[in-house]
Image (cartoon, rainbow over all chains, first blue to last red; front, side):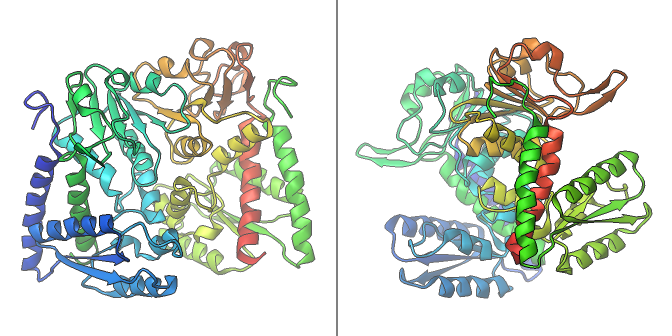
Length: 285
Length: 285
């Protein structure tokens, strides 16, 4: 896959290629009598969470990972939830543990995440995995930024010495994204809601990652001619799904851009599967 | 302390103020029969390391922290060193453990650091402390960048919305520095050896942190009029000590600048003391 052939960076295609590799690995593990397993804990009945969890379940099936969903009532106590996580920590058949966020208000997300065994933390949210990423060690990386790096790699997009700008500084996208780009030798700027003159930064970006959480926030006048634009947003509007980038306005100006849907989203899930296999191989492969 | 009164940001003065606060805390802990303790492990006889360790010992004495230095031979095995760390992990009188780097080549630094109990890791190098910093949680922060933040705070230097540029991406200065500036709402760029057109970034910086490791690397033409410049470098030359910034050339152009010596260095040590007290209070205070 090369830019030029197609300026639309298809996360869907890359995800297919990744999943095909993973399926082969699952086959190899079968020969060792190992069946990789991901367990997702879903608390309450948030409709969006239910949809995300069902996507993850289907993706596991596609590559042959054993997927289990544990539904817990929304009034579950924090200590009961932590006990559930502990059980999974000790279960040898469980390679990946994912607690679907958000959790009800009476539960401390961070406490729950910190209770997951780091080597089963396939979301890459445990502080030790965050730290390992920061110092460029092995560990389980956050799925969305890792998936974006995979898109950039498979499309042979050069990062060394490039001016990369990330809009957004969340713990699950913006900050780890900046770190990963830095480790690939890009010069990296993190912008956010308090940034003044945002367009002055984005207009100079060779690589622009939008993780803002606002519909069509990045417009053509904010983008450099020939840039590579990665859109992390996902919004449901009356006209259908859209991202943080005004795709129609921007696409003619850029070298390459991820669409919404079919861009970053599928790669987040493919990376979750990959993390589950990595966790499985590291622990018992 | 305010800029304008004096454009030279005296890390020495800030360190004195910090140490004075810490001395009072040590007194309060004495009333609880608690004597905070820092233990430094020094392997081999690297002369620079011996000097650094002696500075740390003197600083402990100034504020009343009990300081112990364990000298180990340079041919000590990795497993013996790890056993030494384990002993300190379990010693209730030891609040802070610091293994002076660099270690001899046959020893894996990262393994040693990861063996230190995170709540005694007063250098802030353990992956879990790195991760906690990244997600803006409590934890023991890396001393040099934390010391710089203290200088900026005590001189009332506004960071929100400012364009901050960090040159250098080490695990102990560049990356945590960028993270701390980001958490104070600066827009942050990390530059490094692979950055192209470095001056284009630095010339726009309101806050410029030089952690390059090269003598007088940052010259006046690279600095914005009215910037705040922080010099992390420390080089011994025939004309005496100098930093990563050409101090004489730059000082007239800027709003404020840290000198070398007397700038960042004393704050690194003051923060080590502060981390030791924090560790003491968290664990047994």
